Amino acid sequence: MDFEEARRKVGSLIENVEKVFVGKHEVVKLAVTGLLAGGHILIEDVPGVGKTLLAQAIAKSVNGRFSRIQFTPDLLPSDIIGVSVFSQKEDRFVFRPGPLFTNILLADEINRTTPRTQSALLEAMNTAQVSVDGHTYDLSVPFMVLATQNPYEFEGTYPLPESQLDRFMMRLEIGYPSSSEEKRMILLQTYKHPLEELGAVMECEEIKRLQEQVKNVRIEVTLLNYLLEIVAKTRENKFFEVGASPRGALMFRRASQAFALVEGRDFVIPDDIKFLAIAVLAHRLILRGVARQDARKSAKILKECVDSVKVPL
Image: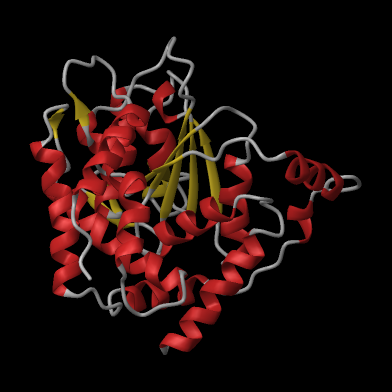
């Protein structure tokens, strides 16, 4: 796939998702960036703003499989991974895959299940495979998790440890639509949901090719140094107990390459790095003297770190 074809494909994917996910162009671009970069996304927002719709629209647009898991305190790792059951017909144990074996997975309210089940999901995200009864099974390609959390309800929740938050490439907030966008959304659903008529604009195989194309997006040494200086600032800042990890730096680089492709370029510019810094880094930072991770406060301090780094010309 050459660059021009890749640019057209990405543009059509974004346009298609926005047929049903109205008025959130920036969120759609970031979600597609995560998909092309091979990352996973944590969405922290109030209920009813379209988190499920976004995941379903992406899945339908790439003709991929979609699964949704409602995380609850009694959910077990086998409920999401799958189990081996004895087949009398075959006279052996046969693996029955769980909802994890999909292309786009919505992990709804991930902080409402136990750490054991959280870890099973996050380990699968990290390795793109699962092991059951001594056998290893590869997950689908592409495979992207969109996990959700309600930032205001903490009763009966199991907050994700920082080491597990670090596995998410980006943290996003969708936010409420404007009055005009909300009116358009309501009118679109007057007779039926527009998702029912949403068609695919590409196949999963093409997403794999686009993910390979992302690796060819150029990032000059001066820009890589700029990115790494921002990461270093988070480690030196007096307000942070823990700064961005090396994994965070790797994801920051890959996200910058993917976002450049989303923007129609085969090279990264400083604005790509500045734009992505908060989405990619804020949830990885631990504030000094704060009991609970506060991504919004971290984002405010992180912005000051970004602004303090000289932009290369």
